[in-house]
Image 1: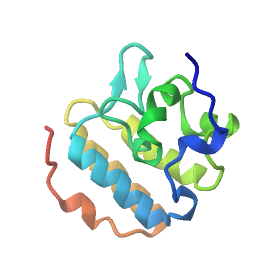
Image 2: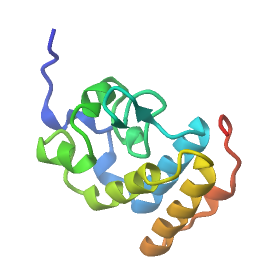
Image 3: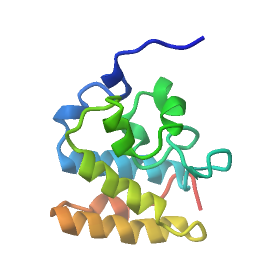
Length: 135
């Protein structure tokens, strides 16, 4: 049975009003909590569902599996499943996750996230925290 939704319903409530610092912290806290790269063997790509990629916390839980089939954030924007604002920044967070080495993921991801923080002049101190469930 197909769920009929308003296309912009995939994003969490208040997404459009988040600052880049808030988004950085939410994404980082999520990955520090999962402690692992979110990769789907089925789709041969990083995924929003399961442990969830860097952009997963910006999607309502019930739409993450559907979003897996649409690919990167810009595709969700194209299909009007999420608002357009923050698209570039969310993709930077996704790239930090997706391009981090699977072996030693957390350390490599932190390096890439610090690069994002530098580019956008953000506080990266959240990355000094230890992962709560990971490698």
